[in-house]
Every structure is written in C-alpha cells, then in structure tokens.
Length: 196
Image (cartoon, rainbow, N blue to C red; front, side, top):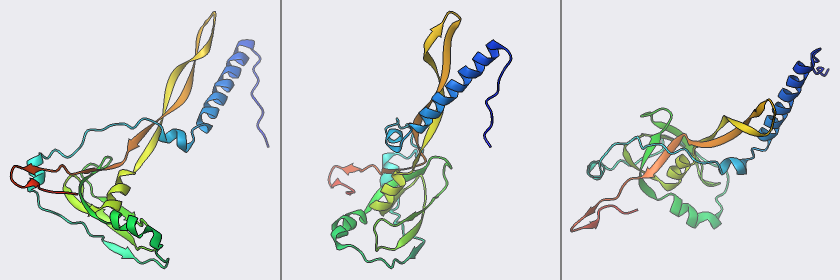
C-alpha cells in the first residue's frame, strides 16, 4: 500500500512541498553516491596525541612485551606462499597505542592475520610504550569510521525572492584507535639504542 503525495489547496504551499521533495531527492542521491572508495578519500581528522611522555621517559621505561590473553586454534592449513610475509608481520615492534574514544582505557581486540594461524584475543594497554607484533599494531592503526556531516550549501539557482539553500552530505574519517611507533633514542656512544 503506497502512501499518496500530500496535496495543498494553496499554490504557494504546493510549491514549497515540491521544493522540499526535490531537496530530499537530491539528498537521497548524495547519500547513495557515498561509496566506500569515496569515503576512503575523505579527509582524516587529525587529533593531538594523548601520550604526554618525553623521549627520555619513553627510553627509560620498562620493556613490556604483550602476549595474547587466549588463542583459538585454526583448522585451516597455512598457505606457505605467505610464510615470508607472516614472519615479517609477527616481528615485535615498540609502539604506543591510544584509545581515542575511551581515553586511557585498554583496547580489547581479536586478530587473525592469516588463514591457518590461531585467532588471538589481546588486551592492549594504552598510552604507554609496549612491544607487540607488527600485525596487531597495523590492525589497531586501521580502526576508524566515517562520520557523515550535514552542511548547508548554496544551490545553483536563485530567483527574484532570494537564493535557495539545500543540504548535502559530506564525510570525514575519524580514528577510533591509533598506534604510533615509539620514538627511537640515540646515545653518543652506542648509536641507536633501539631498532625496529
């Protein structure tokens, strides 16, 4: 059962209803045009880092190595063509993870970087330098979402009564979690203190 379009007895009100309908159709077409490719091109909102540690504090902090809370084995067979990539991805790197939405909270996350390796549950502490596998750091770095924002834009037309305004959807990319490499320190006698 389809609903009928409302009719107005006044000519002015009918024109306003027609304008509202055309604006809604333009908005609907704009939303449908938001493909994943277009969303991935959206500008990323830059946020200031939460961790306020100096380079010396980071260098003098204890080396914490992260281990998974639990593992669930896989029945799949590992594809040996990906062995070199897996060996590289499982190397430990020193990073600082940040939870952008729940500041200071640890990050619960599951990983399964390749078929045939176990799924792992991690509880990543935030705002402190820790050592973790590269595939975990990269997965945390990829956690973002697209925010749709309504903007008032001047449409192409205007008549003797003024300019018409319509709404158009614009999107931005917001990082939900972030993971950055811990700064390396150099000493005069030893060269690089830490390498990745």
